[in-house]
Image (cartoon, rainbow, N blue to C red; front, side, top):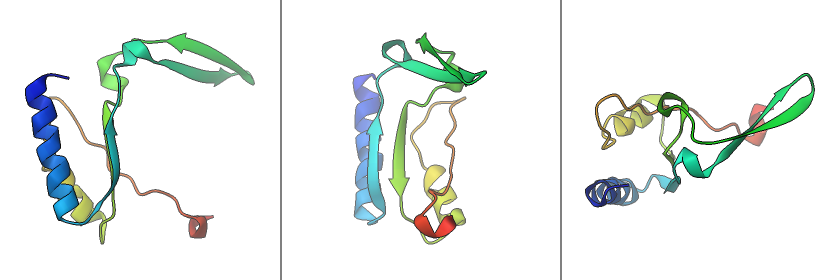
Length: 97
């Protein structure tokens, strides 16, 4: 990750911490240094990276907000370049089963 992006990401992390909502977050190594295990016919198959850039996750934040709209508002502030996206989903808890 370019140095300027590390600073931008650090600033976003600081904002989330200051708001008291950041539970966890990290950047991930490039997909070229990873692998996937997929399943078909009941058997696992391993594929080494890299993977197409439209199907990789480069990092994550886990935040605790009051509702989906608040999470979307924070996601809208993410320091990402054109073409990037943030996926927002709720984490299942024990009460959800």
